[in-house]
Image (spheres, rainbow, N blue to C red):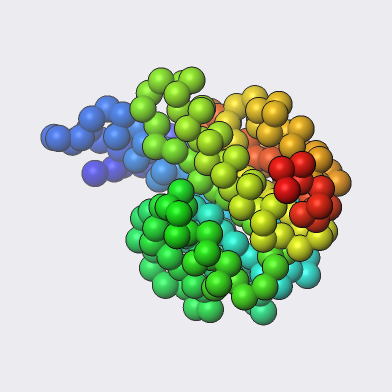
Length: 226
């Protein structure tokens, strides 16, 4: 399937039934230092390092006791939370099946399902210190449509965060190139003390993803829609 290349790089031979795009993806995975590190350190995905790097900069995991992970599959972000704050209660949700994680309540359900918020809130059993969202809509190949669909998820995640966060809590969400829309940023700034955009080193340079980090939740009274 593969052979050594110059400088120790693994090259992937083409195979019957595998598209050139799949071959490039496989080669990139085999040579990705974060993929190798994740396997060595027991994380389910390289995405774990995005959260680690964001937390190194913003310190939103410090002292958390209740965390919601929206778009939890395959579980790398929750693994980071459990490793850094073992006592924290974590609840997660995803359309995709997720192998169990010790001490974590996981729901296989569309976050946009009307039942989802109540299920998460009940499992959380108290106000959240942190809402994480690594959700992204399945792409259709049309940039504007893909952007709108993903930003719709971010807006829904933010609305959920306003309902469940304790004062002082934080919201971290994946957005796309250019960051969050101006209307969403304005709303986040009304509800949080600080709102920043960041692209962690583990996020591939050719990826359009960025993250918005909102900290210091002001409480439900700050929400102009309440």
